Amino acid sequence: MLKNITFSADKELIRKAREKAKREHTTLNASFRRWIKRYVSKNTKTTDYYAFMDSLNYAKPGRKFSRDELNER
Image (tube, rainbow, N blue to C red):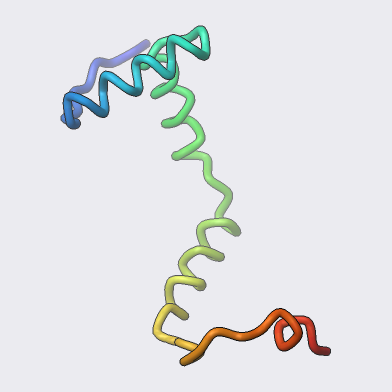
């Protein structure tokens, strides 16, 4: 059984999303249903990875490295 819900978004963003869905021969509603299924069934490992990477965002290298430095072993 489907249940209706309401979200709010910028008018222009909704217009663009509807245009994209039309180009993909679907509807914004169907696109949202696919998105919410993926959202609730996300792999825990993926979620854990992103949480771990976010926990490291305090580390800053202090400079940019050259291509040679990045490829050193």
